[in-house]
Image (cartoon, rainbow, N blue to C red; front, side):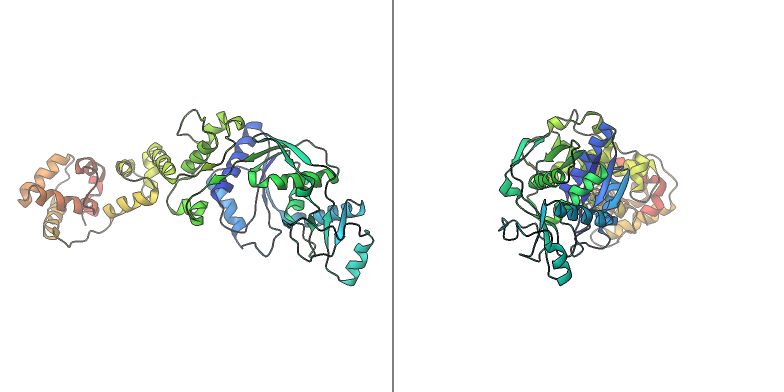
Length: 420
């Protein structure tokens, strides 16, 4: 069983998506279930609607999963398990702070020897308290399938909070409990979680959970741009395709891919954990632009035309002409939409454009571009730049672009609309 766990506290980051993709791949390869966990116990930081947005993103990338649940659904179980540790002397009540934080500071140990009987008294008196798990007596060591053996010292793990003063479990306690409850036995996540993994292992051990679990921590994805460019929402807003994003993130993670351009089902066939580099990798938007262009080129002509409101293979071929110049759906839209939009008759060539428009509106259907151009030349008396430049503006709404001889056969059935 594998899981993808994320919180509804902001826009999904690119590296978070990468973790989701790789969990999906491993689950498919191992023919195991893949579940989604929405970690929503931090009510103050949750943003309404972000849980729905997470699921919509996963759907766009076709990351199939067997089930999804919100961590808050298991609140009672989390609380029960925390009290069990307290009753067994493996955790203790602490009044040193009212904060629910798993602080970076080493715990002072002031309340370490407080008897569990104080729990009922504190509840009755209304005195704020938290529950801390007792620090391990030895270092926590686990094997990571990417990093090798990882050691966290007893002091690093420390006596951390597992249940806050508001009765809400902390991140590590809720995560450890939910992995146990769900039967997750392969945890694949970012390397920033290494110390958290040690803490969660300590929790599981203290709760008596003995099932074997595999761990793999993915090296960081570095982004030299600002925070906005590190989100999936930004990629979609710029016009990048899900297939291209998946392709690029997998190539970053598995540089020994047998080919450069591929789909998710293809990657499932050959992806290997052993080929993941141990060092951080850098996000390169120019490389993603290249892959996006290649995926657009591979699309069915009729399908790509649907991105612009058509169901016409000729329009798809027209779109692909512009892939020599641009790389994203947004950039293509800036090229394609002016072709079918009403033209602006102003500037240096406005009179010639008006003349050519009138001739085209009255002209018969002409299949061949050279014949079409000669017809316009004879009917208008224009030639050279006086013909070609206003004709390009009339047919494309732009001064530059692919050869008109390539464009015309693909728009001739829309000619009256295009030249309007």
